[in-house]
Image (cartoon, rainbow, N blue to C red; front, side, top):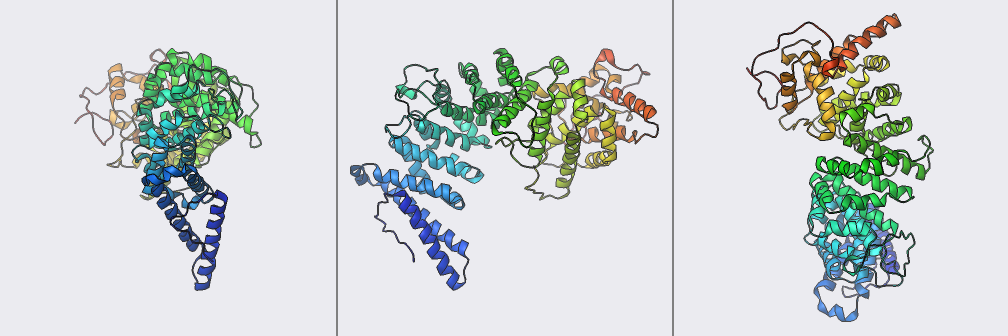
Length: 606
């Protein structure tokens, strides 16, 4: 039997409403079974009907001034119902998130509603934006939604039944989910006047908006706070997550964050507590900020390395494994993030001396595997460039390169990355839920890491046995697509790679007028400078050169003799300092002028 609602009915009991929805869905399913229809379809139709009813009800509350005389009980009840619907029926989230009446009503309550109405509006947005790219776009496109969330950040609870900072916590959660993996929303949040300052004020535990008198340094981890001016540690962490997600998806947002007076000192203060999750969040903000050149410079100047990153790396914990506790995994991910940030902030001489702990290296390899397989680790959705960049940079240290070259899982993952890129290029409509999309940057970092690990004989033999030369030649033969933007090594944290690894590979390219045994050490400075000035449109030169190098190797019959030969060749490949280059016969370089060829390999002008 269907449960019908009068269009003028004011719903007051959330549990009754959701129960009615379930009864309606069951009734629709029973009726559909009788006529041969699908139960899931009928349940969805009844759910859609309820969403439409709630939308009309909210629109009536917002547009009809007569509801004001009845107080806010009706609007709170409907918002609670909407929250329960979005939480208990995930299949209806897209329909709710695309309903203009509902979104306009949420904007109204965020900007003009009571503290409790703002709280429940934020809670609804948290659910709608969670793991829904479509809803993030819809929500971000609504005028007034972000400014409304800013108003919620400045609001404290006026009820003794709700924690004073609960509204701020839900607003931060909504902003964090809206910004996650969405560059437009991230930048819009950062550009909203007063948004960054308010978030930083919350992180400092300084109260709520205009009502606050001075910052409080007390960390309150309980819900009820009689002072009314303090922010719980959980809310401070949520505010930091907003900044972290914004910085992760928009370099301009990262620049705006570090441009706020006292922002870095504020974030450093969050690191000064003993809760692992909060420590991880604090380090995570700096990790995402370090991807931006201007932010990285500001972090070096404000001693972030000495006061945050190195202490994070020294945090005591055992070795990561599948049975690690949740607390330990938070520490593992914090240490891995700290190492990623540290490598981005380090210059070449520092990278050459940087030795990472074996447990942290193991963690990064685990993260690489999870990122490749589209799986989270330690509740974080890792992207391929993060572990690949730090691995490529860490191999500058010889001792670290030896440790990584002996890691069987890492070598297997590097080969899998090459295979995944080739597979996805074979079909124009490649789509895999089990594997992440491997970009040109990911591919370049993978090959650079392989080149550096090839200084170890064991890694070379592994690559040869697993057909890496054949895969590299396949990569080299691929013609650049018109829509390929290429790999631009312009980031400061990749300069070491550009100067020492990628340039070595480019020097091996046949279009430089040399054969495959031409190493960077044989080129004059003018030529090297020209190489580094170009935007690298594809990486066929690098793949082909490395394939040629690996092809000279093989499974040795006489181990000592073969190992010695491999070491000589790999050392020649990795010479990078002018005062360490091998002494060889002089070679006449091309005197032709250099030019830039769009969409083609780098070479002399013809």
